[in-house]
Structures are given as structure tokens and as C-alpha cells.
Length: 372
Image 1: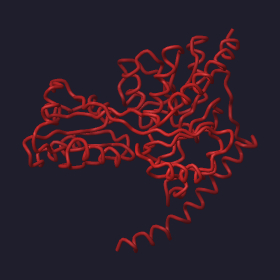
Image 2 (image 1 turned 180 degrees about the horizontal axis):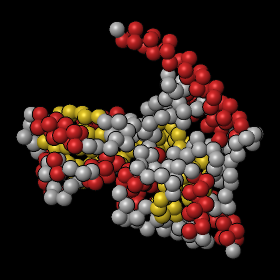
Image 3 (image 1 turned 90 degrees about the vertical axis):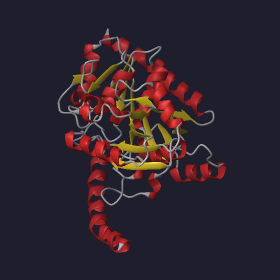
Image 4 (image 1 turned 180 degrees about the vertical axis):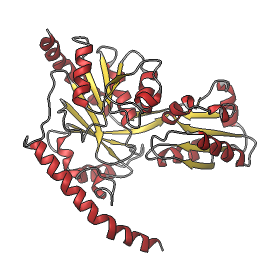
């Protein structure tokens, strides 16, 4: 039955992938040769972070890493389209902004880094222009989130994220596969980061991966892995000690609730480090939870057999759950989220940080000169 389903998908979806791929190929060539479509360069340092594969390659943790290495010495802004927000146009996030106004990821970034500028605009050129005008001379760098395919902006530094668990050289174009564009378009990147890399990756595996990626001489390659922090309460009332008691207690059952693109690595971590007794409830990426969803979460929680149990979600999902109307349905339950960060392997951390800081340091003067 599964084979028949796969054959049917190939017959229907593969031709659509060829058509989609041809359209994207033409679009990229129009940008390459400035025919009808043009990329705009800016005086201010612009760093783009994106991917070719649809789904979770870890863009937000990498943006947050960039913020950490720049914010102490430079004035930084992030700009994204604000995926699934209920507003349009340019909007600057504040401490009072709700996730549905700017999107869950920008709001998460603003809450973690209140001193930086976080903006959204579906038209990135306009967004950059508004940021540079509003903070004239007081802005040193702009980080573009999920902008590898947004070619109307030509970034000064382009970072491409590649998922170690699903390398793009083994994939196909949408809708048959998960590629937004042909994998050869990686040529536009200055930096390629292999994300979610296994900590115990063997040298031979690394060499094979590097060979398959076909890195160009002008590109720098780095490897990162995901690290998880201590479980944190989503709603007030659940003390840190109570969370610790549950995790270290006997017969813990966990309901994992996610609305992210690729939850596999999270599930693997929970089963290995938190509890083997896991029930999984998956929603679409960036899902806006409603009352019916919350009732479903509560019902699934009550179905857990153990008396020692909790609900575990991601930091991004926690941002939405905290603000959703009607969350009193689950706010009295032990709902926790798992913070996630990236860690570079080997000497990559120092080399990467130096490359980023040197780029901003060298180019920020151009913007200040231009603004005078």
C-alpha cells in the first residue's frame, strides 16, 4: 500500500516539481542578469540567514547567535516578513507587541533581546529603508531572517543553513521534495552552516558531507549542533523546583506539543533525556492555537496514564500559547518549554564570530559616511 502511495505521489508531484523548478530557474536568471528583476544593495551591513530546504533548519537560533556576538558593540536590527502575522506593512516590535502583530519568531527575539530593534515587513527593501531612516546613523547592522530567496535585497553577507539530518543533495524540488530552489543556488552564499550536526560525527562522515556539498573556494563552511537548556514554565505558578521534581520523579509521562517545521530532533531529545513515555501532538508550523486546540491539548494530557506528567513544548510555541485567548484551559497545568541554542563544533565558533564581526566592523563606516 505504501509503495502504491509513493508511486502515485511520484507520478503526480514529480512533473509539478519540474514545472516549479523551471519557473524558479527563470526567476533566478532574471535577477542574475538584472532583466526586469533587480537586487538592491545598501550602504549598511546586511546579513541574510536562510535556507533552501523547507522547514526547520534552525534559522531563529542562528539569528539569536548573531545578535549575541554583535549586540555588545554594535546597534543591531532584525528584519523578517513576520510569517503568519495578522498585520501588513512595516511594523517595529516593542515590549507590548503581541505575536499576532509581528509573528511568533520576531516576538520571541524581542522578548529575549529587548535592547535591539526588531522589525517586520513583507517587502524587505522597504523595511531596510524604514529602519535606516528611523535610526539614521544609529544602526550598524541588519539581520535578515529567512531571506535567501528574497532576492530584491542583495545582502553584504549571505548565510545558508543546511540540515545535517536532511541534506539538500539528497532532496528534490517542491512539491515532490522539500527544496525551494535548485541546490546549486547555494553558490550565492558566502557562508554555509550545516545545522543539527551530530556531536559524535566521525571524520569520514564529515569528509563525505563536505564532498557532497561541493563548497566553492570563496565560501566558508561551519558546523553547528543544537543544545537544549533547562525546562522553563510557560505560565506563572509553576516553580522551577516543581519542574525539577517532576523530571527527576518516577514514571514521568510527557505530552509533547509542537507547531514547528521539523520536530524530530526535539522528540529524540525528549525521549533520551526527559522521559521515554511520550505522547506527541503535532500542529502545523507557526500554528495559531485556538480554543479547540487547547481543549485537545488538555484532553491528551488527561489521557496520560501516569500521575507524574507534564506538557512540553518549544520556545516558539510557548510565545503563542502565553498570549492566546482562552489559555486558562491549560494555564493551570504543568506546561513547560525547552529553550534551544546552537553550538559550533571545534574551532568553528571563533572563526565564525571573527568573520561576522570583521564584516560589520569593516562596512558599518560606509553607512555612517553615507548618512552624514
